Length: 361
Image (cartoon, rainbow, N blue to C red):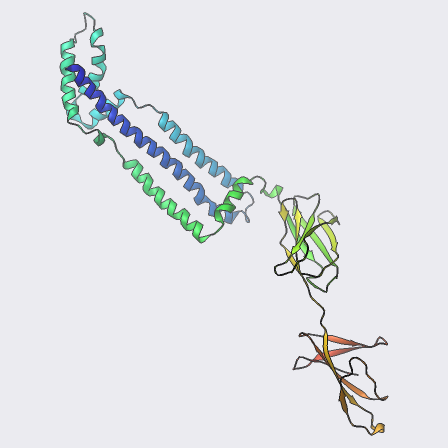
């Protein structure tokens, strides 16, 4: 009878231990999840501060490692910490004063019942009676009532709030977390002492087909050994071939290169190792064509001739002393133009209200 009562006590404590172990495992998982959510919630500050404070990525990495390390170490130690029957018995007796010390006494005395000495005041019969009484007491107890889920519930509530904040950041700031991951992976390489800032300028950003363009690069921060231009087709730039062009060193922090030009718009980026400049777009503009030339002749008085109009196609013939008004229409709007004469004389043309270009010879 005492043996079955003792087994009831062990079964009761075992069920309580199993329940508390489940709680510990749940707490461990929630702590790890909270640590990860903490790292994700630090991402907006790290990404926003990195351009202003070059060591923000390093600080983010240190804080992330501290959070994740603590979030993994605490659950590991928490799960390894033993759950003993005797310590559990003392806790239960503290919660249920009506048990007195029967539970702990039964655990300690019953296994020793067969090893009592002749001078031991405790008899096996008394131990059996104690165990039977304790077995009857625990039979009326619910093991689940000694397993508390209050801490995991609070952790889960906090995790839900933090998870909602992380989701809001992801929706409001697309690309935030890939950028944060880049900061973590390259934290030390992004320190100011290891960054090269590349600034690219072009001698012209609108050129005629085949016109050469001179590019210049200025660097700040870590000095690069070489700089390369990446020339790629611009958006809508047709089938311009992509290529790379090595730049020549023109000073301590300056590099130069000449691009021979092409027939299509290109997008040019300067690379110094893994660092690049803001791209520069060079638009190749086809030269305007003359759609028509209208000429009005005003002969001198000695000829007795009236003014006449004609389209001479670039050849002007008239009497000596005549005044010639020239109107030129191009295939696209122009801001300015000049008439270039065969003898080198150049006449500037003015923009008329109707978009034509006018000049007087």
